Image (cartoon, each protein chain N blue to C red):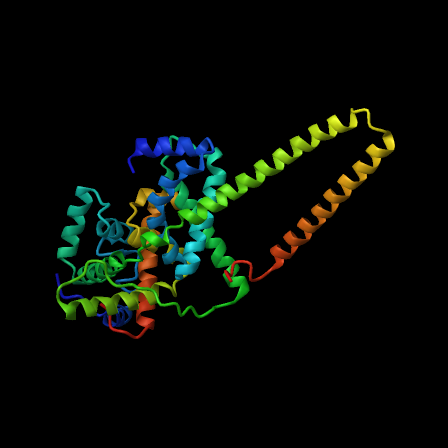
Amino acid sequence: MQPEIEREVVRMSKSGDPRSYEPLVRAYEGPGFRLAVGMLGSMDEARDALQDAFIKAWQSLHSFDITRPFGPWFFQILRNQCRDVIRSRQSRERHEVRDEQIDVLPAGASSDPRRLHERSEASLILWKSLNTLGDEHREILVLKELQGFRYSEIANILEIPEGTVASRLYHARAALREALVATDAEYP
Amino acid sequence: MPAPPSVKHWLQRTRSTRDRHGYSEGESIVTNNVSHENLMRYLDGEASPEERALIDAAVASSTELQRELVLFRSMKNDLHAMSFGLANDQSVWGAVHRRITRRLGWIMLIAGFAISGVYGSYLYFSSAIGAWEKLATAAIGLGILFLFGTVIYERRKEWRTDPYRNVYR
């Protein structure tokens, strides 16, 4: 969505018209879902967290600065929502084994079936390893790799300096590398 | 660039070269004069042209850096290629809209009820009807309101403590 159009849609939503909120939800539900699935590792929980985040954003729109872009602000709300879900999950059931099957097939489908199979296997190993990482590491990898945000955007969402983004990314990638070793699978 | 190493072999190699501080070449803060932060910026396309040139030169002269870069790049590409699409029929807008408008509906209902109640009461009590009749009607009205309020309070309390409230039956 173009910034001017987005600003206008946000302004109309701020005035309390629920219908004008629809374009914002439609524009951000896809990337938001990717972020939530990456952080929570569960499709169902991700959908619930996404819904709750949109409701919270709607209820807080009055305090939103219209000159700022909606995306980073919304992703901040969604990230906090996901953290709440993780916290309540941890207090409810410690180390629950999540056996939900998630389709992690690589998006850029190769025409070579053997190559496609190899990449699918690699993606699955990577996905399982990602889910064993701590919240801080998984969060930054999801923002960078699944969402494709730039460092400045990540810094904005996580409210940390850009230098910290680079350093945290290194540690997250190193942790993922260690987690891959723990799976005992050959990667890449 | 060399062929991507298996992560297991890569780690075995770096672990076997730990120095006396416990750091290996691949785990130290700086690898071949390239800090981890700069390496990440380079990998993610965030480095300036000058930084890129410096890191390019460092990478060209270090197989260790090349291996690290190939491995990180492979993880990056595989993660980036993962797709968890939200199909059109899975849009959350319907649920979000219902929840937004339901709240709005409750606010309007309560506000409308309160205004009509206050205005109706004013008209009724300022009319010429006898005092006993007014008192009895007020008692009935307040009794209904009180019962209604307690039922809502109980239901809400029950809902808040229900562990299955998010489970759709």
